Amino acid sequence: MTADLISGTEIRKTILEELKKEVADMKAQHGTVPGLVTILVGENPASQSYVRLKIKTAEELGFKEIQDNQADTISEADLLTLIDKYNNDPEIHGILVQLPLPDHIDDKKVLNAIDPDKDVDGFHPVNVGRLMIGGSEVKFLPCTPAGIQEMIIRSGTETSGAEVVVVGRSNIVGKPIAVMMAQKGEGANATTTIVHTRTKDLEGHCKRADILIVAAGVPGLVKPEWIKPGATVIDVGVNRVGTSEKTGKAILKGDVDFDKAKEIAGKITPVPGGVGPMTIAMLMKNTVQSAKFAIEAK
Ligand code: NAD
Image (cartoon, rainbow, N blue to C red):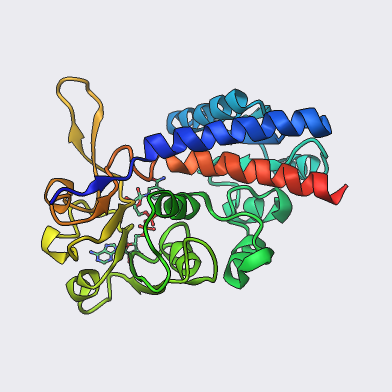
């Protein structure tokens, strides 16, 4: 058996097309477009490239996009004042502060200063609390877990009553996706188990998963024989395992042995081209959602 491929690249394309239309409709009906500000402190090349990608996507969708670059000498107080300025700007619906920040600035203090109603990354404690409560309380889901759930829904995977096993308990992936899958609602209503480094029988838990979500950051951690035949496997792991001699680019592998796992699973995400491309799409979706909330609140 060869599993169906769940392509994040393809799903992202569809989501971005849907969002582009929503933005055009919003502009036509309400004379407003989603506004996103990306705050980049310093000149970290990896951060610059993430920010560039976010800006490019936002511009393609027709957002108002502000790139606010600051020198790495900016004080914490001045950065907090800058965030406050955007918190109070009615044309801005999403505020992104690219991490890491310089050592003299407290990340937590800065992220917590973002208005939770403009926290399109979904990491503010208020949004984490809203996610726990679920239902209509939820404003912004964190982007990677939201992308995972979207892939599960759009691939037609049945979640109601399904056994979902999540490998990893981080705040950005493992914990939120486990909570989301257990909530009432579409693409959820599952029975979820979180497994981690202290779990006694990792293999046993993985083997009974109808949906296996792996976010450990350990290449090849999940062995093909741990996969229940026909299961849906979502591999979140992105691990650099070397450099291609041909292209000079990093060779990326997931946490699952893809080539063998695809012979056992029913559906599977590749790495690269799986969960990775979904994260920015969900960030854009959250920003459109935020603009809609602002219109409704007028
Ligand atoms: P993390 O290091 O914060 O958490 C990893 C979790 O996996 C921990 O909770 C740990 O307990 C668990 N774990 C590690 N080794 C294990 C083992 N041997 N057995 C059982 N559990 C184990 O990582 P994270 O931020 O959640 O990211 C996980 C992976 O997902 C990384 O490879 C990361 O690059 C990738 N990731 C991808 C995206 C994306 O594609 N957009 C986004 C976020 C993270």
